[in-house]
Image (cartoon, rainbow, N blue to C red; front, side, top):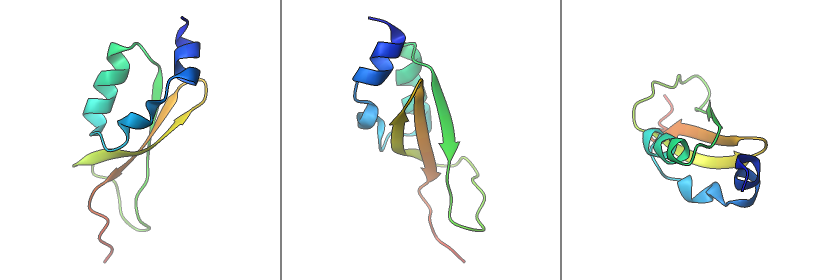
Length: 74
């Protein structure tokens, strides 16, 4: 089975809720190409503390959408 087929056919949604490090480890073990995108509330910078996967997209690679768990807005 090719890696591209594995990316397209396998449900990677189980990674939602994983820490970024845990998700990266799983994908690296499976030799899957991935990208990481970050999101945050307006005016807040991502500091990479307690970052979790909040969504997964699959195209030619797996795209992990990540956010910090602190969504407090001042």
